[in-house]
Length: 339
Image (cartoon, rainbow, N blue to C red; front, side):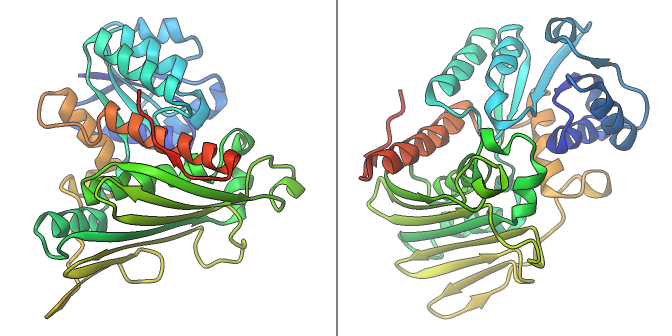
């Protein structure tokens, strides 16, 4: 199957790498307005030359093109995703699906109109500790979920590196991951949020976006969650990312810490378990959960399995994040509305 990539930045490069290496994919084109960036990505991550395009219509007219991934900046997914979907392409969109509910719905509807599959790249669903945590909840090892705590933050160096940071935030860039994985693991939608933000540090450095977000959320069952997401960890931090995720249930608890040399702990009434974290199934050619997630899109496009996250699930995450912004604006709790 012939695949193309829209956007050749940090994550677009991973799409190029996966489609180039996957035995069931042929990378036939890259669309990128910055030709030099595309050339550098292809030179580093592809095994040979790949045609580079700067015009969307020419890119979508590549003979035999069947599937497209959109890896543009967060706020620029909608137009290319809709065009590709309406052209009948199978479509992979980096998270978040879009930065408004209206745009996310438009992408979902375009995919239905075009007839191709739509997958949102919430790649933490195949991040081994989260996959194990998901299974532990399915197996009833923690009982009824009562509380979730999630923290995913970056150093200020990441906000400085992202040229379009002022058009996004740690909410879209980071909270989208944890909101999705929390709903996925618990098996319920978030229906209400109350949130606050803090500003000043990034704005003083010319980056017009909040420093951090703190969010309290409620699931359908009444279970609660707290999310913390910041872009102002000090640059001297040992890692660029700080990730913690906890689930407290009626009969046990899960603790994920991927940044302090401990991955997943499962505590029950009688035992403490430290599951082995295995390399994803694609082995040395596809090692790492980020590539593994994209490889699952290749499998789904070839009719071998389901997408990692559906367009409707991506729409739900965008609705939660939009409600968070409304809560910050209003100062009170907001019900999550999905049209």
